[in-house]
Each structure stands twice: as C-alpha cells, then as structure tokens.
Length: 490
Image: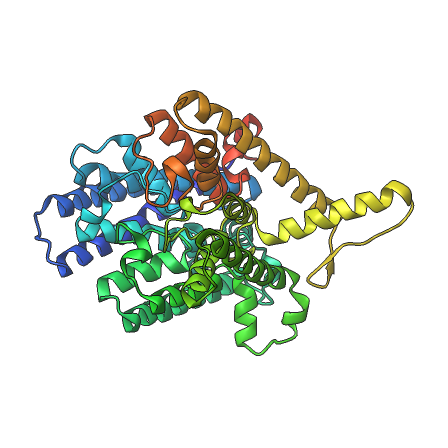
C-alpha cells in the first residue's frame, strides 16, 4: 500500500473543506451575522482544525512515490468521505446548543452523501452560515469531492482515471477526450451551469436570494435539505414545484448524456436505454400515484393532484427527498410504489442515489436470459447496453452488487430493530431504506415531517455509515476492512 499518495489526497480534501467553510463564514456575514458570533467562531475553529490536518497530512505525504493504483484510489475515496464527515460535523457540534456528537455526525454524513435526512427538529432556526453549510455540503457531495480534485489536478496521471470512475458512478469510457481530467472538468462546468440555471429559476419563481441559492444546491445535488421546516409545502407555489421537478429529473439524468445532447448528438436518444427507462418509470409512477390520490380523495384528477403526484414521484426516484405533502398519509399501494422508487433511484453517472436504473435493467435481462437457458442451455444471448456488448464479468458484478445491497439492508434492519425495539416494522425498514439509498425521508416515525433525532446514538452512527456506504456504492468503504488491502506497497 502506497500510503503517501493517500495522505496527499486527504490533505487536499481538508484544504478543499477549509475553502468551503470560508464560504460559509462569508454567507453568514452577508446575512447579518457578526464577526464574533458563536456560529462564526465555530467555523473559525473548524477551519483551523482542517488547515492543521491538511498540513500534517501533506507533510506525511510529501515523501514517496506518487503512484496511484486501484486499491489506493478506493482507500483514498473511503477515507476521504469518513474524514470529511467527521470534520463537517464540527460546525453543528460547536454551534447548536446541547448538540449530541451523534446528531452532528449524522447531519454531516447526511449532507455530504446527499441523503437529506436530518437529526435536528429545529434546523430552520439555525444561523444562516450553518444553513448554508448544510446546503453546500450536499452540493459538494453531489458530484463528489474527489471528482473536483481530478478535474483540477493533472499530476495524478492515470490514477485520475481510477479516482473518477470510482467516485462519479460513471466510467472514464464515457468521455472521448484523451485526458480524464478534461472529461471531469467538463462535468464540473455542466454542474456549475445547471446549478446557476436552477438558482435563477427559483429566484424568478418567488424565492429570495438566500432560499434560491440553498435550494439550487440541494436540488442539483439531489440532496433535499431545505431551509424551510415543511420543505416545498411551506412555499405553497405550483411554479416552484414545477421548477423543482424539472431540475431534480435533470440532475438524476446521466450527465454525459445531457452534455452530448446539448452538443447536438441526437443519436444517443436511441442508444441510451437507461435514460428512456428512467423517464418511462417517472411517467408511469406519476400516473399510478395520481390514480391512488383519486382513490384516496374521491375527487377527479386536477392540476394540483397531478403536480403533487409528479413532485413526489420525481423527488423520491431521484433520491432528492423534498416533500410537498405528507405522503405518509397516502394509501398503502402508493407507499409501496414509493419504496420501489427509493430502491431503483436515478441514472448512473448522475447525482441520484439508489441502485441505479442501469443495474435494474441488467438484472432483469440477466433473469430473463437465465429462464431461457433453463430450456435452451446452449443458446448464446449477448446483452447490450449503449451499443456495447456487456461482458459476463460486468453482469456478474451487477448481480453481486444487488445481493450485497440486499444483504446489507436486511442485516441493518435486524440491528436497528434490536437497537430500537419500539419502532414499527415500516419505520425500521424505511429508516434503513432512506439512508442506505440516500433518500432522506421514510415513513411513520421517520416520515417527511419527522426527523431522526429521537434515535439512540449507536443507531444514528450505523445509519450515518449506511449513508456513506450507499453514496460510495459499498466497495470504497468495505475495502478499508480488508487486511490484504493494507499490505506494503511494492
């Protein structure tokens, strides 16, 4: 294991976080906080800790070879998210009165992983600087801290390719450029552009500047943190809800697909099956939820009912987690549909969570092929995605990933039910579902108008770890517990 390159990358993580905390100080001052308020003092301390940690790690990593292989890349990503979560918890712990450490870590993990679940009942009363950090942490986590390094650093060479493909839920093959840094930089420009477009749309739609900035960051990152206690319901604005629907869906669509579409590559509309499935699922889910609302209310469908159904279908499937109504009061079939959408999630190579639509497509086709092989064992059936034939190894990895996620979900449910025996089955199930798949709200005790503060510290710690596991799609964290990974670099 070449630990020096890991130290170097972790120092960059802390340096980037220091810059983010400085932005929070600036936001607090602009919103009327005073230079020596408790909230800003908390950020000063956090910046000092981050800078000191960056200096120590840089010193430890300045000697040695700058070689980055797959195991170093995976370890760097896993450790970066764990370290960022701990450092990101400091502003909450130092600002919020009587804040438990478990609440601070939970909130930090929820922000950086773009989950959107909260451990604070009174978050709307936070000072502006802390509210800004909640949103900024999701925006930074949306595309992934490591992708930011890849775009800006050319010294990593081939190692950048490994970092990018592991961090962004995409592959370096998605770019035609010879240098992966250029491809990642293209993603950054696109991410900034749609964030700015969303901000302006929210401002024109009726939000003030602070609300627009915060909601733009948490919409494009499909994170779901809001400055308002009732999320989008507090705005009571159909215009803002339609703006959110559009940008949530856009953010959960494969970034490379949209970039190429903007460049005039209309042929990808026919080639990209995942995007077609994604929007077909959103349309079908909206229709079904509208029918369930008709059954629930006994009224004919109207614009408000269709908008409500569309908003929650898009919010849940993109794993944003905004709410425009209390969907915990909906009929059981509607809740079941939302649970299925939570599991599926958005497209690969986007900020959406879940297991990703492409894996569902591959798993279903693999199942269909297995059925055909039951009575025609010698039949050769190649599986194609995006015009390319999938290897058996790729198909196998998808099946293994789904098995691992399901096993982790069941094991976590057993632990949570033992730790929180008073919770109902649906509360236990949805708390794990909402965190592992980076959704945010669940049902019943952890519903859209509830929070996770009442849970025991050990439960919140486990759920925070599930958020990171889900965001990094398991392997970058699981490898940290494999002794073979830490063998000496050679």
